[in-house]
Image (cartoon, rainbow, N blue to C red; front, side):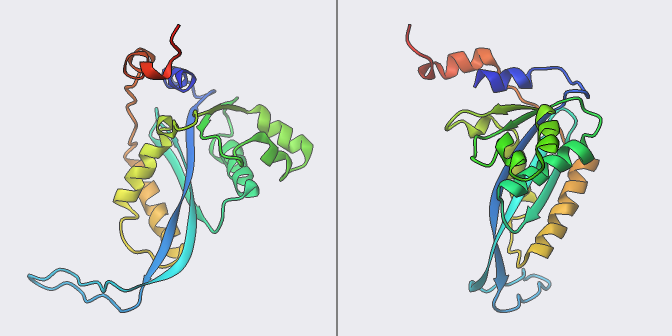
Length: 206
């Protein structure tokens, strides 16, 4: 826990940016009957019956100190999907960074081994050397600021029925563009001193 908080307390450095990454899923739900459009004095009417159209996997990264984020929806989330996401982060979104301080949870796909299973050893090694990975502790995923961004996305973008992956990708792209244009930063206030006081039950009794 203190390792993650220490990373968040570092000053901004474009050569070593702090990036939080997380992933989740969202069910694709379509309407069986077309909604009845709203009218003066009457809201839109949506039938309670719906159709399940599968599940979309969502990857999200956010740089808290600059308000820069990137989101994408895919059909699945395998080791290869994560590896290609990392390649895009390193080579397209942060090509000039010497090393990325990456905060993420300890999912079995979130490791350098996924890079080696996807790319040739030389390429995998090149990317692994540009990652300074910091894992959130077990039951401590709330320490990952990407979860704050996922919560904002759910409330602002995905709080309705979305029938298919293409529609979701369009909605997510519009939300990402708006958030980036507004440079919505995250002001993290939980310090190590507070952790040692409020969460002292997690520390050993000496």
